[in-house]
Figure 1 (spheres, rainbow over the protein chains, first blue to last red):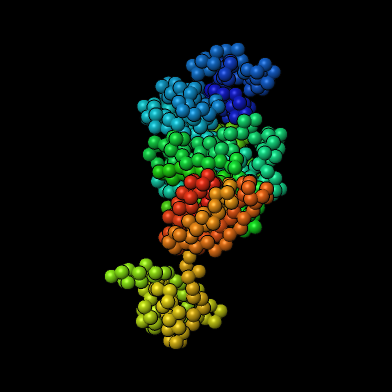
Figure 2 (cartoon, one colour):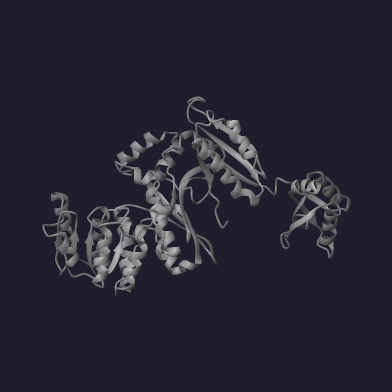
Amino acid sequence: MKLAVVGAGAVGRSVVRMAGEYGHTVTAVADSSGAAVDSDGLDAEAVLSRKSARGSVGAADPEDALATEYDALVEATPTTLGDAEPGFSHVRQALDRDRHVVLANKGPVAERYGEVRRHEAESEGEVLFEATVAGAIPVLGTIADYGPAQVTAVRGVLNGTANFILSRMAAEGLDYEHVLAEAQDLGVAEADPAFDVEGTDAALKCVILANVLGDGSHTLADAEVSGIVDIPPSALSLAEEDGRTVRLVGEATPTGIRVGPRLVPMESPLAVDGTENIVQLETTHAGTLALRGRGAGGDETASAVLADVARLDR
Amino acid sequence: MSAVADVAETRRAYTVRLELVDEPGELMRALRPIAENGGNLLSVFHERGNLTPRGNIPVEVDLECSPGRFDDVVAGLRDAGVTVTQAGEDGYAEEVTLLLVGHLVDTDLSDTLATVESCSGASVTDFSLDAPAGTDEQSSARLRLAVDPPQVDEVLSVVRDVADRKGLQVVEPLVEGER
């Protein structure tokens, strides 16, 4: 397949680097300031070294990337809330041209899911978004295989940053600020960690899941969200004395979304350590199904993007 | 009328575990003393195929009766020659553990606990406070509650309300599986 990649952050760059290995051709890459376009296929290494040396993938207009020849648009610009722009317009442009869209950006399917689906219905193109929920873990593909109507609820640990902080606080008895600083040094937490530690990122993933399971009308505003910022070490040690621990757990059902710190038994499958993610699906006929693995990272998330591309290619 | 209502209100759920010999009519014989002593059967879980080491069949019976009659129910069972391996309300209550975080002491901790205790079907069975910086500062508490299973959602919402009112954070237990 021919791919146009919009957004050259960690995920976009990994898609560009890995696409060839998966048998695809990248015909365009755009970042916020420029673009590289070649309908016969770009040289991935050349584009990426220009990005790291000069800050942009190329001198072309980013709009040219959207106008070039491609089969699937990979939308990997940063997640934005509210109107989900510019991601939403990119999706719309691709669908208007009857092209497929693969999203790594959560915004369009968390905030404007109904509109995305309506545009998709009027297009020859399809929209897939495996990479928006739990990185490399094939949650949406599994739900699609089982049938969304057969999945009654999804719950899980969906933010590696928050989980790293909670599990390290519990293991070492350290306070939140101390562990956050460590996480920032390790690159596990962003300089502004609010999105992760306040539960917003996990909530967006749950909103997307609720949209897939339900009628597609949910947005972040419908989610009940609390984060981990106010959890002191004393709460974690009281939990531990009782054979339990605290994890930031997200829950999605066809009708609601809830994210917050929850007490779970230490031996619970949900008590994953470090940056690992876990997702449990409640199914009508097959009980609980669990999937765990890496929920973030450029190559990990790109592997989910390329799994979607493979689905479109079938 | 009011006396009847009082009696009805004080009926509680109990669980008794019995061991029955695998013979026809054994189950009926074991259940009769329960009704005869004022107990109302809620459910009978007959674990056929799961034998005790002595070859008996374990049966779990949920019933409700007024607290004053429960001893009569158990005595009636034993008088009838039924082996009662466990009897009490503990087996029937759901254990709910949660954490509270914030200015617990400044916001009248005993009132907080009393509010939880005032829920019908809930009692605080264990309480642990950790106030590392002294009682004037933020502290954490772990509560273990015994709750009648149908009351769990109601009790959690009472806890949420009192915490909300006092600016405390609740870390609720996660219930896995279907509710």
